[in-house]
Image (cartoon, rainbow, N blue to C red):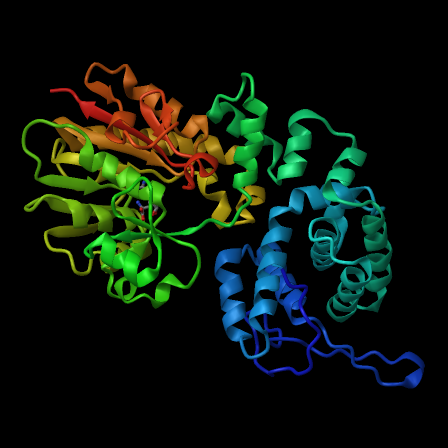
Length: 484
Ligand SMILES: C[S@@+](CC[C@H](N)C(=O)[O-])C[C@H]1O[C@@H](n2cnc3c(N)ncnc32)[C@H](O)[C@@H]1O
């Protein structure tokens, strides 16, 4: 870890927020003397990400790389790494930081200037989680506050952060807040209480050792995910050699990287390989491996954008299979078309999957990778856990049920539907499948036997992957056969 450095110099270029890129000088004139403290570039960049997320609903995983690219002349690699750690860590810890700050600020946090709140979070994160020495964390945040909010704010920032520093580590702070049970787990692991409850339900975490597993699951969710590649039209051994990666343990197409930029690999640039979580690879392979009798020539990917699973299906399908890839979003269909640019016998369609242009019973296999809360991929987007609310679940679950009904119409009698989500939430997974499981024309197939080498992945007949068990996103996969 680096703590960023004070560096001289500004580049006059503007970032997306209109802010000059890189470290910035500010004017401060005690006793008429002109003093020009230099703002810390890493911390300023982290602040700009926080501000983008809170003021403009930006996605940190898109905004941060953009800022780092723009400021690359001013930020050394270790500053960029520190900016990343600060931005992601602060966003992830928002709930805990706010619980601590609430007791230290006289007004409700919602009434503070949002810029000031972001700065307090940034400073508090450094003190509580990174254990940056108080003088460094407080002084740099005060300098940022003076430049961004104004001199009046710097006194408040100084006073509040000194109290944060005096409170000790996160563990000490959480103990001082006097919370117990899931609330304590929520503050220790950076998950909203409702997600802790959802995880407990999805893990079936009630028995002996259950709390330990729940905590492990939540903590794994706070780690940066490894990069996984998928070898689509290149031999996996060749990809392993050229990427210096390791074979993924579960998918025969997966390569796991310990570091490096996958975008620099020739195989990724050409589309012969791609970046794809190994769990997503298994979800597509479940459809391919599902036992089926009769013709096997027409496949549908009903919610295909941006095309990761469609590209794998296209690469591994038996010769002669026609793949239709649909999505409601025109923009995302464009991405699917690009992902399938070299594939033959594919059709790409903009349509709502609930009212697609295909006749009933048109397809032998249907992949329904349903729109969902994305709670199983929280490692990738640090702010999403605080942006999502429990109220998001019910409307998505309703859409998922409607899409599953439509998928069971689109598939022919004897054909198979794979129902997939990147959320383990029971309402989006088990409950959606249960709503059709008793229909006389539906048979639920067991997925785990299709992946005999993948341990601890059975959730009833479905497959449930977890970051802490499998090193993948928390993907859920169920298979349904339409009876003849
Ligand atoms: C989880 S993503 C699919 C990811 C994709 N299968 C992949 O592997 O790259 C869900 C997709 O469903 C699409 N979608 C949402 N509602 C839809 C609907 N009613 N009909 C078709 N597509 C829909 C979204 O635009 C989004 O692209």
